[in-house]
Image 1: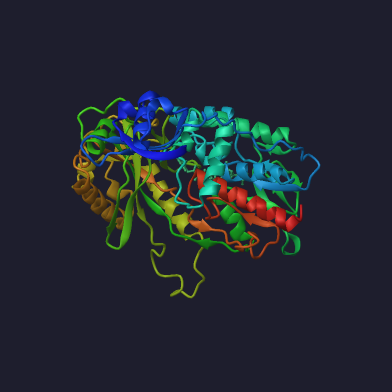
Image 2: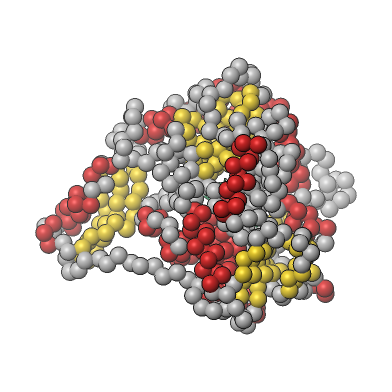
Amino acid sequence: MTRSVEIALPPREAHDPKLVREAAAEACGVGTGTILGSRVLKRSIDARSRSPLVRLRVEVSTEHAFIEEVLERPAHRDVSHATPVIIIGCGPAGMFAALKCIEIGLKPIILERGKDVRARRRDLALIGREHLIDPDSNYCFGEGGAGTYSDGKLYTRSDKRGDVDQVLRTLMAFGAPADILVDAHPHIGTNKLPGIVTAMREAIITAGGEVRFATRVIDLMIPDNAIRGVRTANGDEVLASNVILATGHSARDIFELLHAKKIRIESKPFALGVRIEHPQEVIDRIRYHCDVRDPYLPPASYMAVQQVEGRGVYSFCMCPGGIIAPCATAPGEVVTNGWSPSKRDNPFANSGIVVECALTPGPSPKEMGEMPDPLIGVRYQQKVEQAAWRAGGERQSAPAQRMEDFIAARMSNDLPTCSYPPGIVPHMLDDVLPKEIAMRLRGGLIAFGEKMRGYRTNEAVLVAVESRTSSPVRVPRDPLTMQHPGVQGLYPCGEGAGYAGGIVSAAMDGMRVADAVKVASGA
Ligand SMILES: Cc1cc2nc3c(=O)[nH]c(=O)nc-3n(C[C@H](O)[C@H](O)[C@H](O)COP(=O)(O)OP(=O)(O)OC[C@H]3O[C@@H](n4cnc5c(N)ncnc54)[C@H](O)[C@@H]3O)c2cc1C
């Protein structure tokens, strides 16, 4: 007999393989002694009752033991002389597109404006210490893209289970822990991601692909509506008739370039707000109904959503045991996001709290007889990020306000300790955020406080601004060929083009687009 059963155990017992096996045997109605093999297939925390439980799906067999699967790394064929495909951007979309290209016999040439993960780390340290932003090397730009120095959460709303599994298994083959295949809410952590990204790059190069760092693309060569290559800031021309554009949500110069070249782009909704930071123990208390978290439970996270005046207010990219990251990509702006190490063992819990943005501030362009400006969302983001920079003292310090003070619209006299490395300064966030955002944020926080007792506290601090939740622009593509409708051979891809929202979905999109290139090129 080989079958899987659902069991629920207290956290300590769920941690002990012997007790898990016994409980699974009992659930199957067989003696533990008759079981030759058992393995956990899925694991989730159920914190609905006063004593949280760990729910497990366990496969047991009375016929055989389970052999630990060794995952083979993809990309082991030689493509050095194959048809070249230019991939602009070395984020999850670009890297997974490159691996897929190799698998299907195309030669990927990744052009990345930033540096490799090691050199990039030094630039990140400078942001915290010296308040310096390198526009080509920061939390969003560089090897591995925006996901490299993140919490590495690997969940997605996509229901394409096969594709999601393929991404997770590929990450595991390059060094991610096996737990990501089991946990309901898997994450990798900032300390482990750079090693995985490096191993992926090495595999791409070993197979005959190319990865060129410090290579910012500044122009697309498009004679007769078909792409022929790109020009880089180093003065080089790189030629190929298939170009995957995977430059992420912060490559504003690429959006400007497309617009200037009259390549159709569209504005799309996004969300904007603040990052909120609580002591982790406050969130643990709320979620686990306890004074002190059971050491066998992970630091707690939360998800919250509320409609306020016709727009959604929601938590975004929550990082338990994490750090608020300075994510500006140009001098003169302040942008936040968050990351966590694999153990999520910092004393703070941070999360974006953001409001859906309507993109028609001011007179409607239509009323003024003009075409809608596709960059309206970019300009809106920029305006708020620049206001945050001014309010923070024209450095990377971020304007901040205690939670209750923000709700009551009063200045915070002092601020709690905060994880944000460049530091925070007290400021009225109503002066930084657009009125329609601040008003809904207030309403959202009040509602969250009613749903989660203890969430509303002046121990929590709001740090502005969280503005890069997703791309404010969509680069259209044909749903079948995946090519831009106006430019043959140009494949908009990943989060920046509006087809993904997170590491896993960006990776999935990269693979999908590479498949489309194969079909078009007949490789
Ligand atoms: C701090 C932080 C934490 C995050 N945490 C999570 C998380 O826990 N889970 C999750 O799912 N998502 C997280 N995200 C979001 C996630 O990182 C992105 O959704 C994902 O990386 C998008 O992948 P992408 O490949 O489409 O674009 P990106 O990762 O943005 O990659 C685009 C790449 O293109 C390069 N590029 C841009 N312009 C040019 C140019 N002109 N020439 C050459 N190269 C160029 C950039 O340098 C960059 O490396 C986080 C993001 C940040 C910033």
